[in-house]
Length: 201
Image 1 (cartoon, rainbow, N blue to C red):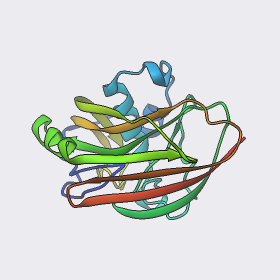
Image 2 (cartoon, rainbow, N blue to C red):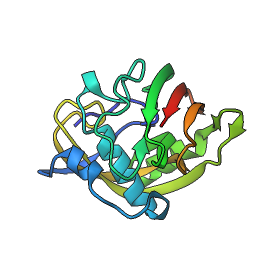
Image 3 (cartoon, rainbow, N blue to C red):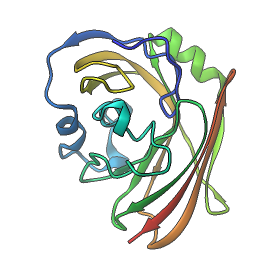
Image 4 (cartoon, one colour):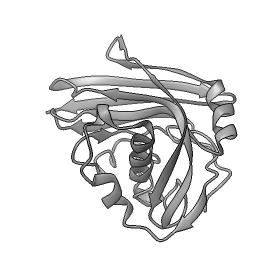
């Protein structure tokens, strides 16, 4: 199990417990679910984290330098975006016009107390073009993450139970055309700035 690495849109230290054998992470992330807007905060976080853990580090959307891995193992009912392990990134990404877009601005895992402490420091903004987007604050919630071997989230294959929390965005489908999505956030000494140049068609 990978621990001690800070990241966001993979927010804080990944302190995960309860490993066991589980289905393939990509299948967990892609399985049909209720509409994104109706998902509980636990379901939403579990699905996104499992998506982020469904690819090894060298082809993972979180370590993506330019958007090359934006379409990697996307679910069929939404389009997930990722941030970075800290610092800046600019990515190009093509998105189907009918898909809701979902991502964490900052997100954290750990015990309930650890998650709460990190969330208390979290702040940031999201803009689609020049319009500021509403951010959903998710308090510590039990979640389960399913990953593949060598992924940068858990570092191993299998299923892990923990608490998740953070600042999240659930966008309805983005209108067809081009759009710039800017994500900026910080928590204590950690900060990130990610720009997605979106092509929606």
